Image (cartoon, rainbow, N blue to C red):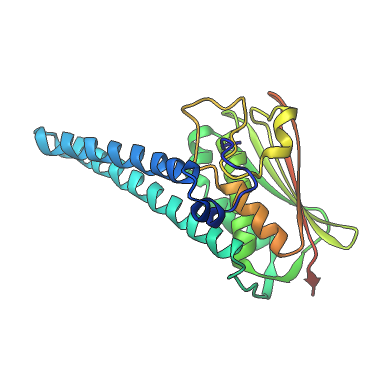
Amino acid sequence: YKHSVVGSHNKIGGFLEAGQGNLESVISHQLRYPLRTAKLSMQHVLKNDEPALRAKRELQKISNIIEEAICFLDKLEVIQKLERKMYEVGEEEIDLSSFIYDLARKFSNETTRKKLSLEVKLRSGKTIVRSDPFVLENIIYNILANAVKYSKNLGRVTIEIGKQDGKILIKVLDQGIGIPRSDLDHLCSMFYRASNIKDGNEGSGLGLYIAKLFTSLIGGSLRFESEIDQGTCVFLTFPVVTT
């Protein structure tokens, strides 16, 4: 689970208004490296008489890098709206099982590459809720992204949907690298990076922070349990009106 501590509990607006350089330097790093990589790849394609297939692969790599940079900026925009309380929670009927199945399919390329088993289990029958689909997607997607990313090859990711104490309970279990106990309380801090993550396996450091903001917005909670080299379980609970 990603991230590196850079003013964990400060808001984006607070960083900028205070004139502190921490956030700006992090954003600069997050954008400069992928854009520089894209530039080098493009120069390689332009300067060399590459076979069509190899050139196509390089261009696809560039496209992916640009998409990651755009995604990073999109996340910053979402955080800004949430922290300024500019997002109004909507409400519509959602079939949680179908909703989560659809989200899980977005990870099919990665699960196929790593030969992962991704399973959705219903613990309390069909669960229809009224909530905000954009909010739920951002929460669950970011949790799933970490579970898949840090799972070992041939492992299993399980999503359990149920109810507990009148609330919806969603558990995401993986068999990944696990999280040191000393890091668990900091996972949802902005730009926090767990101490056992290798340098080559990092992301924007914003996913779980966004998940936490959206979870708070709907009156929910996130909790983590983990053991090194055994895996992690994320508990998401939120109150909703069931139908």
